[in-house]
Length: 312
Image (cartoon, rainbow, N blue to C red):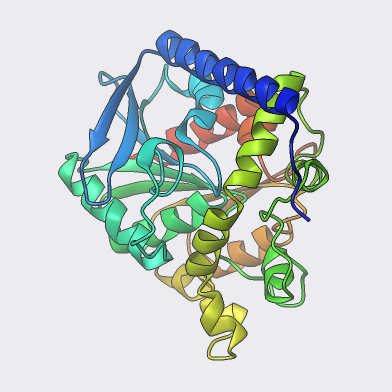
């Protein structure tokens, strides 16, 4: 049964939304963010930080997220790198188009055009969760452009025999389908080792937004995973995964993973490391699924060390 918020709850959530947007606007100004729009189609809203550094890093966010979640880590990356941070189509300010099919192949095509039309000839690439899966496909499509690949708890890989959010989805349980405050708290506990403290009004805004987006998220999740083919038995979870792309990844890859990730098990990292020709692994013992939010400074330091060692 879907939660029915009171008038007071809605009013506090509205105040929370205003607080969140003001916070990100202030952060963006402090970081020197320049906002742009790639008309596409589809439309992609994106942020640029810096233009005078030798190296550029493209950051792709995860499912249900927005580009501003990378503002925390950008504080520690911007002194060494130019940063390009897009909103994935279907999320953030890139808009929702029910006529589009949000498959992994389509995301790759959309970002391929974005990369070419924004004139990115050579860059480092990083992706978190769903953004990691898109980053892998982009790196496979543009091997001469991607100088290094940083994957943070990436989606897309499948470790046979180890329970993950994919198995839950096939069994009919989608952790992103939020119907109540309790569902939201469960999702938070699955994403973070320790859920960050939030003002009550911000939490209530996030709860209402998650409930309001649940059908939209279900559409994107099913199309992204090709759930119709998996549930019909046409393909298996392993066949739908990106495991088969690993052997062709020629650029250096760093796999960052939180040991307390309950969506995508950390044991996937050493498994994928064995499949990749040029890769390293770093496990964060103190974090869950979102090291870029739980420990932005530590992740930034590790990422900068990797890019510094591997830059061409």
